[in-house]
Length: 100
Image 1 (cartoon, rainbow, N blue to C red):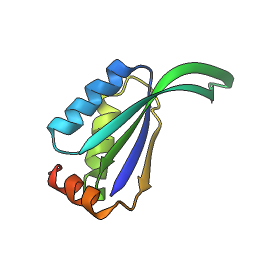
Image 2: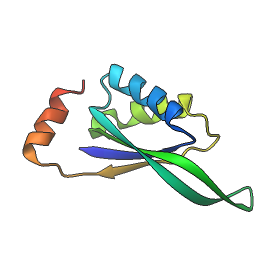
Image 3: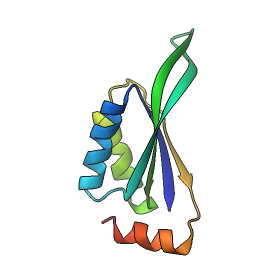
């Protein structure tokens, strides 16, 4: 199992990409949270409200998920991080059943 962390400027763009990934069977589920982000962009310290999405899938779909996010994301340089995750057996079974 993998968990993918992605930041978005607002919930609308997060939902749009999540729905595409779900409908293609690339992820089994996602969680979206409000966040306050602080970062450096073009040599300037920035602060803004964002949304963070945690997507759950398997490593087999990683490249397709990343490609889909990059193609549809509103940011010039989106934050897309992949984490290997160990899941409880029943959750892992559910996840495998709900992705292609």
